[in-house]
Image (cartoon, rainbow, N blue to C red; front, side):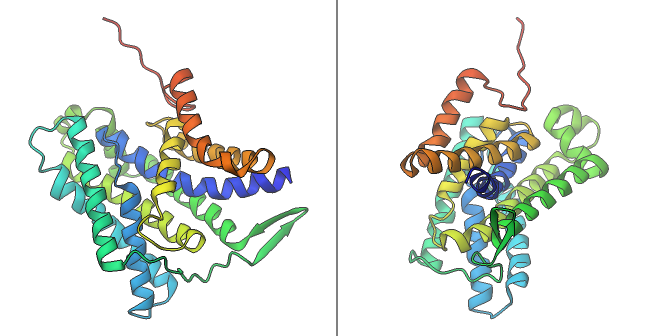
Length: 290
């Protein structure tokens, strides 16, 4: 039972990690907490659903379309709203993301409807594989594999591409990056695009489990925020680690204590981490000397 709970926790934690990676990516580059991260993924999932039902396209074509739409949506939000803000404060930018969240939620509710819809996927949740005494579903296996693949792609992107190095430079010092000739606005738009793409991938993978409706990403966003805080808001590996730890802890609490307490674990972790280690498990804690 222990191994089964851990494996299931890693699978659900991988979904938290995908959303958390998007949150951390935006925060590292712009120092903005993007509260629209979940709704960007939700809207992209509705696009995938429409492509499959209205246009009759296969799942994998709809999945690629949702990813492309998600990327374009992130770039659009950064260009149309955040970049247009006149000398904004960090609090002002956070409020803008909250406004974007409500706009996207309203659009999805109006055009997609508020009724819960079944999201058909060729990746089965009932097809299972046995590894000793542990059972893992095909969907959970795909979720873990996709998360690891995206993490590896991000590592290679930041390590070996000029654009990835430029994104790290903007994250470290925006003014110096401008002096070095880096197009900071383009880098920020790209960052939002990648973050939104990660949200789209998470949304398409979550929809077969939770069903499709405008509220589907609310709980994953809260858990992703807890994961990012746990791992470190400026650490991409920390976001992934935080998601897995949170998923495993939630499952263990649900299995050995009570399922009623699973929803409170994320918030308890936020409180404990902020009190004991505000920088997170893999984050760096800086002290200013005056």
